[in-house]
Amino acid sequence: MSDKQLYLDTLIHLQAFETYWAYYSVSDGKLYLEASRKSSKTLSDSLKALAERDSGILDSEVLSGEEDFDAQDLINRLESWGNGGATSAPFDNITLSIRNLSSYFMALKKYIIKETGSTAKPFLQINREELLFREGVIRWQAHMPTMLLGGEQSPEELLEKASAGPSIVVVGNIKRLHDLMTYAIDGNSFSSFMVRFIERTRMFIDEYLGVFDKFTEDGFIAYFCKAICETSNLDFVDCFLNFVKNELEFAETLFQEWGSTIRKLPSHPIGLSLGADMGSVLLQDLASQLLAVGEPLVWSRRLSEIGDAGELLINNLINSQIGDRSGIRIEKRVCSTFAGEEFIARKVIFS
Image (cartoon, rainbow, N blue to C red; front, side, top):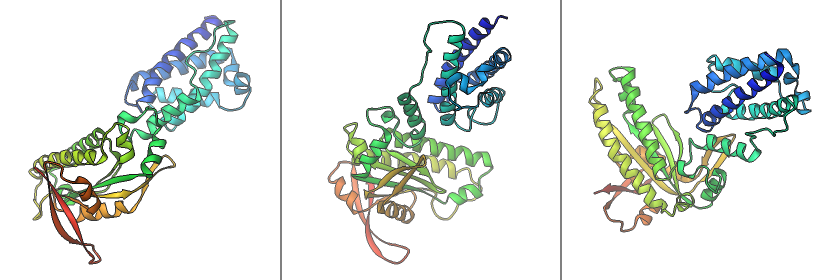
């Protein structure tokens, strides 16, 4: 095979890999995994064959005039990942792989085009803006509403605006989760019910424009922010109410079914308790992790712990915002903290 044919074959394999990799990376590894791995192996074989004829493709100074990547290590990583390597991408993660692969591929295409005497310019060049967009989608899709990713405002901008206004914090608490785990008929049964709970809860949070924080050891934390809901001309109190209504209805059915499968029922009801409070919550990106700080988190957790299975307890500020919305009844409840401090909460009942 001639050198020119090797160059052209490498360009073709590179183009194929970049196409699959674009779908794979933007979907955070959900699309074209096998095709991306297979294409990665084919490309690494082509690069190794070309390197035997032209060592310039391994020299970062020759390719770009800078020592900014280790081409041999990159080819080895492409080969390892193509052979089924355990990581989600050739490098430690998808974001790091995007940075390293893009840098090398751009320099490689320029070099090959020059060596073949072509006057064409490199294709599929990923600029900084696109790279930042991809990273933003991957980083924030675990937290932000799907419909807002890639919009006019970045997730960071939305969180900054949300922090400047009111948010409703919702904390979910699975009552008797320890019993569900201890007395499950087997590990697969517990796992399947837990996965159903997680998937449906995430779906409801996303549908009603909530910001998902995390699943805790016995539930979850989510935020319904005035500024974020307003981007879709929605009221954040309505978004919150729609979420908790659907979540409680789903949880009632799920935990009835779940409870019927365990070996020993506890004396107290199994189910989901929700606690919610409203106020100022600082939402920040700290080392690619969502950090939330604010007093409403404390009270929401307290209310979720006080409430019984199937109940939603709210604090006074949310109660004043609900007003006279139809289909909702409010009951007062005198509660006390673990320190013995009494306060009045409200139980929300949907008709």
